[in-house]
Image (cartoon, rainbow, N blue to C red; front, side):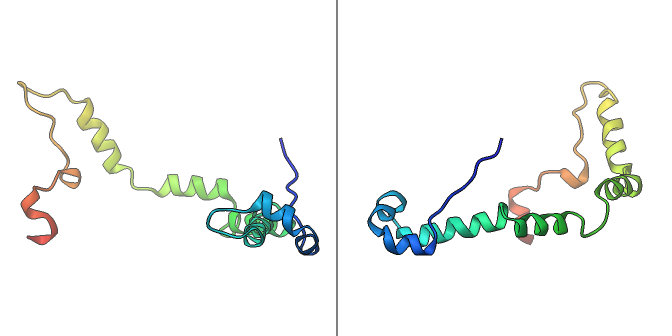
Length: 114
């Protein structure tokens, strides 16, 4: 579902100043500044320029599906598989589950190199 955003043009700001002040005024900003901000936001997200910019950003590094599959293929999964194996191994004789060194909580006295 889409909706059209309509904001007053510069010429309308001069002609209908009282009505615009009434409906667009804010506690910390004047109506003219608020309308300018809305117009800028619309240019970024809703105009043709914004759409082209978004597509450029999305495909700058290449095809997204290919990049996802390459990242998955070459990612080091050893730590994740070791964690799953550790979690699936039942503890022996009421032994507590051991935290990996990487995620072990740091004692309060040893924070910031103290």
